[in-house]
Image 1 (spheres, rainbow, N blue to C red):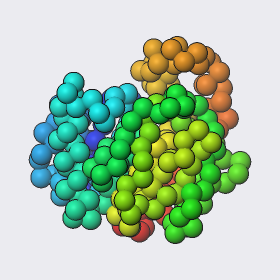
Image 2 (cartoon, rainbow, N blue to C red):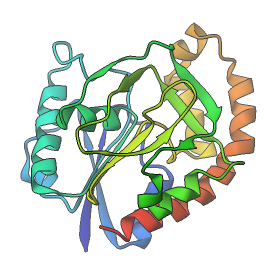
Image 3 (cartoon, rainbow, N blue to C red):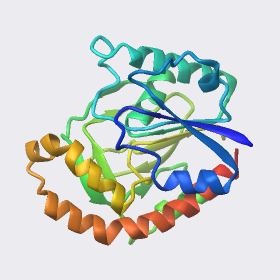
Length: 234
């Protein structure tokens, strides 16, 4: 059985729908809390798949959160060895930093809520990505930072506010700024965990919940097809 390790930064931003696909693909799944785990342990460096999930801190916050620098070193070592690695939101930003790209606060402010993504110039290189590009599909955006594309990365997706929404490095690494993994039920924990952030940008919880009830079930189905397609490449 192949091993997958999901690195979390806050417990409620978990693997979501990806966990179903991993189980179906025959992965044994472990979770490592980035804040308290030993990120230098061989089980992370040698995992068949490393998944780095989201969180409300920035890549550049290493002075306050020293584990971020260790996490970047872990990802950098996996990139060098071409070991399969997936990053979502903060995880994507950490991959970008490990690959030599800049990560910084977005000039357009926070991008929070449901909306489509548009194909980047290299999207056709990854046919399974079409599942997330359907014109009637909305994905969840929840970030304030953004990044430049790492050298040699394939540019997969964009939005009107932030052009760098997804990139891949060869067949082994995928970075997604948006959240295809979320589920209707799981998002209830986000509304509590991110209550201050939502209030700070004037987003009403009943409103975003109502939108999630419309868009999330469709995304869950499309994301499962996407995950299956991507995992079959590894």
